[in-house]
Image (cartoon, rainbow, N blue to C red; front, side, top):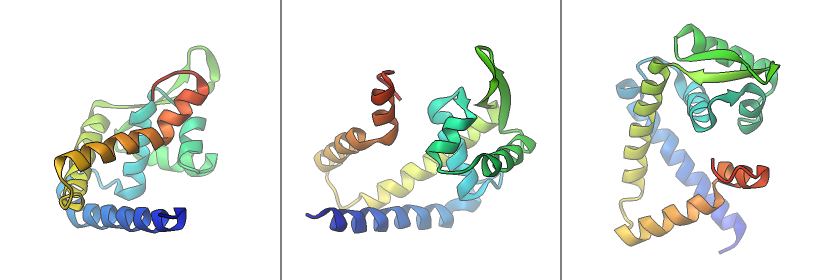
Length: 151
């Protein structure tokens, strides 16, 4: 299979995830963060305490976009900022307890949607897919590049 074919399948899969989450949003997005806010919360959860600059890079957003989005999540009580004790110029982001519960709801809904999309696969195929996805996980690759060894 060519990379273009793989790209088409991944794109369709991602659209399936997006559509499935949108259909369920009323059930899990109780804080009304929307898709962008959900991605931001999950990115922060992946690397917290999350340097704002790294979050912006992972989400491919500029600093002004990140500042507005983070302010909106702060106003909802989902995220808090702090200065890095090692470098006061660095802003660290952390989820609040409410933010963590929101991420848990998003992840649960995401798991349900992906479970439905993967329903044609057997248990061994799902295990293999999980193994392969872990190998191409961008956070895992970044951690290995940075020498941290884990995401």
